Image 1 (cartoon, rainbow, N blue to C red):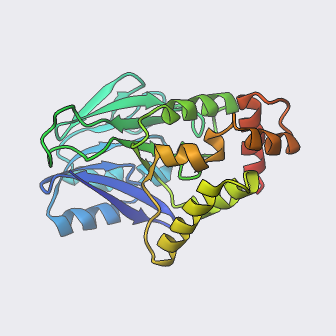
Image 2 (cartoon, rainbow, N blue to C red):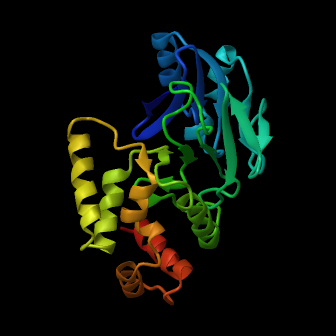
Image 3 (cartoon, rainbow, N blue to C red):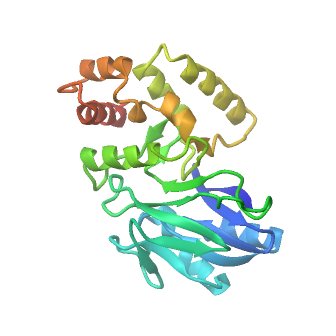
Length: 263
């Protein structure tokens, strides 16, 4: 199974999984990159997965419907235009022989969901993705997290904790190239984090070579992402200096997210 990031707009990524015959597409805000990839790789469009209702994630769906040979899946608690099979946390979606667990991750929007695939035990090499993969939309970014447009800090903090509990080798397929900006903020929060400094250098080299910094990995996020490190003393101390009311992780997260909004 091949994992491809299709650049769209200014900084979006539309994700595609394909087996050289059929493709799953995640959050196609723009149809043009998807159609070009389908034609270039001679693929059939089997399934579309949507994480939330923002137009830069769903806007390309109508133009893709004539090519679509299967369903569109989307969040049950958001206004997604039909045709759409509506799913929520605890549901499972199966496509191209892959099982995706649906995880509720409200915060960026009120009904945001993510899709998590874990390779089956004993799967034959070449028939499954090589490591777990997470399509998390605008909830978790490399080095950061989404803005709270509809949800609460408590919802987003809980959502991020759920994603942080996934296996460390899980590939984080987020929907934007925000990494360098996020890592700049992370450095302001935790300037002595040597893992962060090393990771930032790697990402700067990738962007200098016009390469994406995604997907990330959960293990790296736990080491560098301040929004997943709200129980770390250095992060707590910085958050307290920027308005956190206590050392509790939710208060730390809330202060960090507010600071990031204006960073």
